[in-house]
Length: 148
Image (cartoon, rainbow, N blue to C red; front, side, top):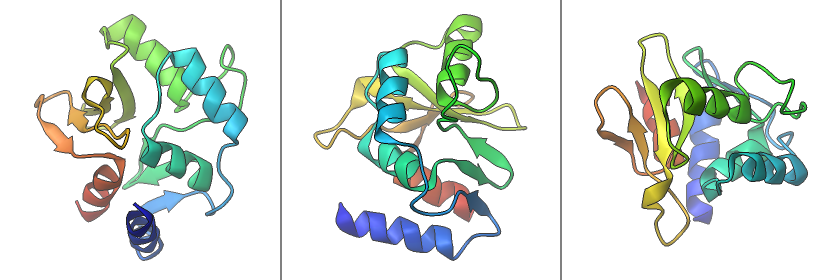
């Protein structure tokens, strides 16, 4: 897995005009990651946790990837992972096993299917419009979105 971290850091760094993330090393705290997981009653995949803790948030091609804003979950709005998932569960019927990580201007919603966790704790990413698997895990998701 260590090689995959190095690979994605390299891809992000060489595509800063496409992947506009926070400064590496200045991400969400362990406390906020834990609080978000507890609030949503899910376990985030390790690659997503790594991204949250190292980049904190950002967007690819102008489409925000949901992150943790480190603002009280009862008052936060915008692309906070807790806010967006509570909204999608309430208004669109997403289940606890569908952790939404991005919605774009084309009406596509990308989500982890947490019912399909592998031995490493990773979950595939699906697109709601097609119902097809988009990426094997979060790193594959980032790579594909950057290369589109």
